[in-house]
Structures are given as C-alpha cells and as structure tokens.
Length: 186
View 1 (tube, one colour):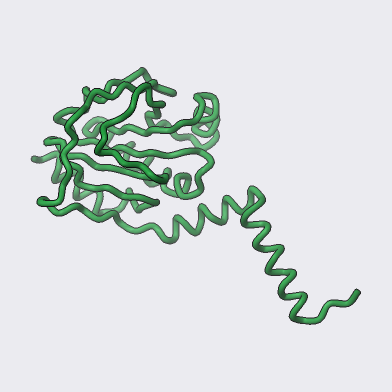
View 2 (cartoon, rainbow, N blue to C red; view 1 turned 180 degrees about the vertical axis):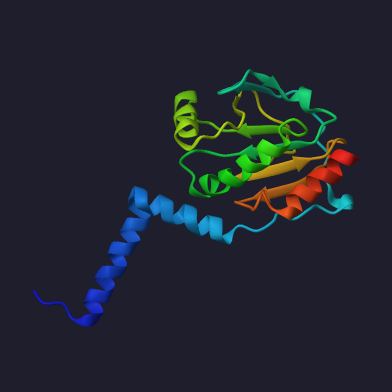
C-alpha cells in the first residue's frame, strides 16, 4: 500500500503525538516545554491577600523529620504541592532546588506530595535533590485550595499569601529572590 503525501504527513503527526502522550520521552518533552513557558509568579496585591488562619497541619516527613505547620507561624514560607510523575513539577524543581540551597536557613520550605517515600527518595537520589518533602497526616489549612499541581504559595510572616501560583514558574529568578528578601526584612 502506497501512501500519498497527505497520508504520510498525518501518519508522522500521529506518531509524534503518540510519542508525546504515551512514552517516557513525551514526559521529557512536556517538561522541556513547561520550563520554556515558565515565567515569574505574580505577587498578590496587599488588599487581595488571603490570611492563613489555621496552622494545625501535621505532616509526615519523607526525607526529613515529621513537621507540624504550626512551626511555620511567623516565618516566611515557600509551600509547593508536587509529584514525581508531573512534568511541570519536574520542570520547576531545579529552580526550586537552587532557591532552597540559598534560602533554606531563612525560609520554611514545605513540599507536599501524595507519593510514597520510596518513590520520592529514588527520584531525589537520581536527580540529587534534597527538598524537604512530606505527606499530609491531616487536612491542610482551607486557604490552600489545590486543584492541580504544581501549586505554590509564598506566605509572609503575618500569614498572608503573597504568591499563589498554579503551574510551573521561574522560582530562581530575580523577582522571587527580591520578594523573599523583602519578606524576610519585614
């Protein structure tokens, strides 16, 4: 059977789409595209900021000791919901790791996943990451409305959500670093 030019083009298109959606290579392509499309997150206007009211949130440490979010009260917090299987999550992790390396002693970093400890540990070892990751032991504060991942919040010392970003972002850029410095100085 001989295919005409249009049929060959359609077949090539279908093969490319199948590769993107149904193979591990497709995950790498999605990760690359997410990295390219990442921009700096938007900062909430002061009058629109939501305040975290309940810090009673227990977290099971996967690569760190267990944690009660109450320990974050009065601190600047970087909170990220993620998963190893999520290409946009994987796309932003190198930037987050760089930010964590520079701010881990000044900012509370909390990474929430539903995945098992072994999966997270293997992923971190393979990629040389050491972000403090947790599973939830109880429901988190109602102010954290997560409908998709990655979702990231930056919270100031007063408990105000300064950044609420759904999707990947450029977390290691000048905008975020300048924001963290200003929040730490408050």
